[in-house]
Image (tube, rainbow, N blue to C red; front, side, top):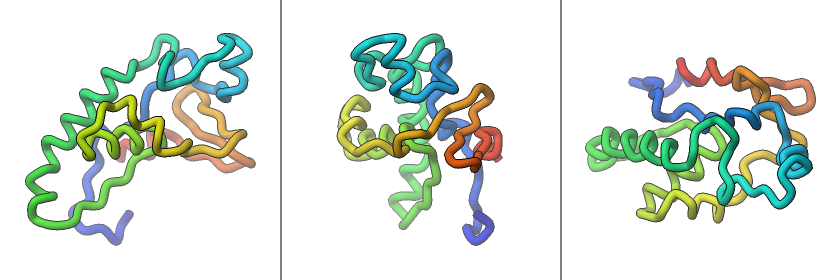
Length: 129
């Protein structure tokens, strides 16, 4: 976002690595694992909620002094944004499930971290700066 002065990418804000479930919709995962729920069951091979929480907490620790001075703009993707919200509010990361689903039905995560919907795509690498 070029209009933000001093904007810097932060590796700790990269979206949750969905591992073996990259490229699958929640519905497709539930066909493979009946009753699957991300916040309860996690992902196959990728990061678990604890790893993502460590990254989010590290980011919050670094940004806290700037928050004391004023507003801070933070740009992050879906699930990570929800975890960031929960942790900033002092909640357990699993409380992130209470903040609504970031993607309407039909979004898919593809290998390499590209999110697609109706022919539009955003590569995860673009988020890394």
